[in-house]
Image (cartoon, rainbow, N blue to C red; front, side, top):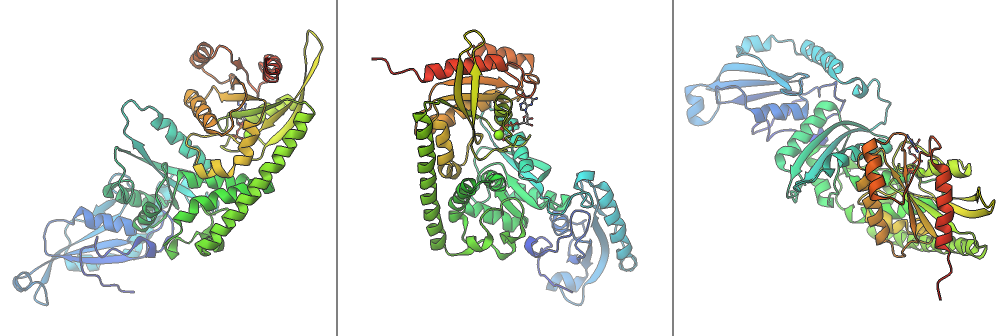
Amino acid sequence: MIRVGVGSPRQTQIPPLELPRYGAERLSGIRCITTTLKTEIPKESALTAMALQRLDALAILTMTGAGFERRGGGATGYVRSTYLAHLIPDPHTPWTISPPLSLDQLVQQDLLDLVEALETEFKRSLPLDTASSTVPQGVEQVLVVAVIPQIPGDQDGDANLAEVALLVESAGGVVIETLQQKRSHPHPQTLVGAGKVKEIALRAQTLGATLIVFNQDLSPSQVRNLETQIGLRVVDRTEVILDIFAQRAQSQAGKLQVELAQLEYRLPRLAGRGQAMSRLGGGIGTRGPGETKLETERRGIQQRINTLQQAVNQLQAHRSRLRQHRQQQRVPSVAIVGYTNAGKSTLLNVLTNAEAYTADQLFATLDPTTRRLRITDPDTHQTHSLVLIDTVGFIHNLPPPLMDAFRATLEEVTEADALLHVVDLSHPNWEQHLRSVMALLSTLSVTPGPGLIAFNKMDQASSEALNRAREEFPQAVFISAQEKLGLNTLRQQLVNLIEYATLPPIG
Ligand SMILES: Nc1nc2c(ncn2[C@@H]2O[C@H](COP(=O)(O)OP(=O)(O)OP(=O)(O)O)[C@@H](O)[C@H]2O)c(=O)[nH]1
Ligand SMILES: [Mg+2]
């Protein structure tokens, strides 16, 4: 097919969405010939356009001729010299340009040979785990874009980067690269500036990314603008979290709450998503309610949201009856809370021989698990009985639609007699995690009972962290759920906690 465009290679570039996609080790099969009046070597913008379209090659003909220059083109112009540019697997200068060639020399180039050789080189240069041959089909290849707000003295930036990567992995994707940008003011249309958008598009093309994840929330129009300019699906942190939740939800109640959260988040984001961006294909940000559901008119979705809201209300009422039943039996309850991946489910398992799912991923647990725990006092031989509740973990900036949809689950926490706050002391950001959990707890409508902090994973914690935690939280217990360390002290403290929590009011 021959496509004729008027303008520079950048202006006449084929829109990213229309380009064929074969992955990072293949070229597009498109060759482009461009003419220019200038004699100097091709401009960077033309070469960038070549890289963005993954052109097989770009032939540049520099034209000259008296009539040509005076009358603005036509038959009197002739080719002065030509250049042949093509991509190479080099992250810094991803292209190379030939020395000036005569037209005859250019015509003699064997482009098929060149393309074949280049594709072999591209394949060889890709890191092993991203070469398409080793990546199972359907695993999202993610380019993470981290916009770091420029706040003086902010050290949380790096930690948040690691967290986005963990979120992507927990959703089943592979992070192939992270691009960072420090920005004090977000760009209203695209969050990052135009230059950065181009860089993202270029890197995504070069690496064969299938999805772009931003570490910050994007407005609906920002998503649309970015998708058109980059030519790939773009999702934000909240979508990734919603996706993990959708994958983890096992129970009826869990699925119900996830669907509600997703619909509430997506309703304002529905309008005008291009056909090519149809979410039918699967992958991160596409699970949960199906595409057909999302395409139904807003009213339909609003009705579904209403129905789900009612179902969640019923769930709330049902859970509340269960709790009342427990209270009548006078069994005190302790909710295990903490940042996601702190080791809450592992702790429940070692204390009660439960078989809750544990994994080194974020949001492994979604549905609450409740287990009876009996503790015998070694001195008095008196037996205390309590109910331990393990539930969904927290994360900083937990998306508001999730907070709302999961109110029935979060109530298990707020209605417990006491809280056991598990903190992963081996995590470099344990203090930030602890603060985030405290902050989230304080936003819940019902104030939870007294709390006990258990610093977990002390088998892997640094001595600095141990000392810091001991100094700042002298009342806390130090445990390793995995290595079963400190559990007797914890049991004793739990007894003290429920005795304190269930003291009859004075007077
Ligand atoms: N080294 C070490 N690892 C632990 C310890 N306790 C738990 N882990 C590991 O930490 C990871 C997370 O444990 P989970 O029990 O699933 O954590 P969680 O708090 O329930 O996490 P979510 O349900 O995802 O919020 C797992 O890989 C556990 O094996 C510990 O004491 N030491
Ligand atoms: Mg868990």
